[in-house]
Image 1 (cartoon, rainbow, N blue to C red):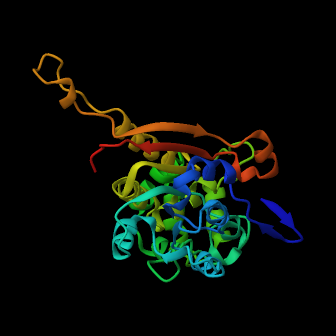
Image 2 (image 1 turned 60 degrees about the horizontal axis):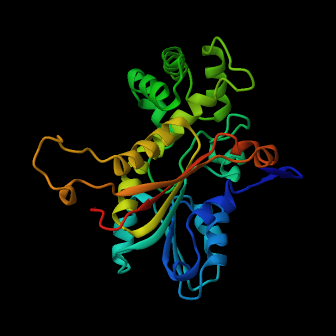
Image 3 (image 1 turned 90 degrees about the horizontal axis):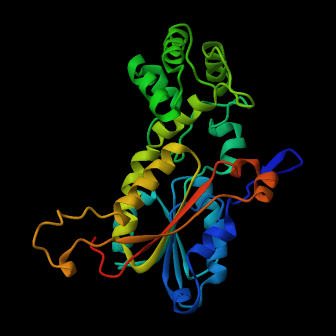
Length: 318
């Protein structure tokens, strides 16, 4: 993240590393690729630079600002889809695509999303409590907090934010909404600040709560699980899947998904099964990469990123 005047310019995390992991060389440069999260287009633009004239890139995003940004790309090899990467199989099938050569999924939210007060993602600037990636669908965080049961609010904050004060925060939210509507980010941040008794050094007490509500409102973990399965299903032999996560909940899902494709359960060795008929690994792990110290210094928001890369093996079943 670089600050210019009073605005923050988005820096794509692990830009070169993520695109390099797709191995866009030789015949692969003419393949079909998917950018599951266009964001502000850093990865997509670099992929296009590395594709040959016969290559193709289909990108997805739920955010209207991202869609508007993508529509500025004048390249016949490129197409943007206004939807979640969880719909990948359906959207690719509708275009007559059955296999792709590489898929990139950057699960982070962009700096403009965080820093624009009107989106409601940030506890640092006052704005409407929205938090939706796609403002044309679903309910806002304010609408959800106005009516949801206290126990559900507590479970969301605990499970998606890993917040140990979830009980106190949920109780405080329900108490406040009986007095006045909770409609702004500042209101919610103040409620959390009063409910959290101890603070992690260098971290705002509202961090975990805002993360939890954002994840829930946007169904981020559900979309991730569906999206990983969809990505694997349409990945060609030797196709690469690259996923960048930014918190432990995401990374755990990605790690477990790859492990399920790499570590295949073998039958009892005493059974009369030929070696050729034994279950085989469906993917192999290529890399696990974290941002360099230099990148983190220049872009502190990169510090929690983890990129995992796996390749589909020939003969693997869908």
